[in-house]
Length: 83
Image (cartoon, rainbow, N blue to C red):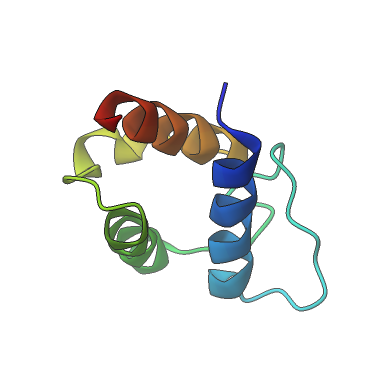
């Protein structure tokens, strides 16, 4: 389970990158279908997350990321492993 602070930060980043206006991002939202992110934006998202959370490459896990919750879990695990 991702830390609530990490989850909130991930949702904030995804909200900023989503082309949808006035949409409150939830863990259940699908990145492409619900939030309108395209494949290039997903690549950019992974780079932003790597930088923001000071992580190594997360590209290997990118194909398994479908929902915001998937991203929260991945980043939460990566941050916890770093500690």
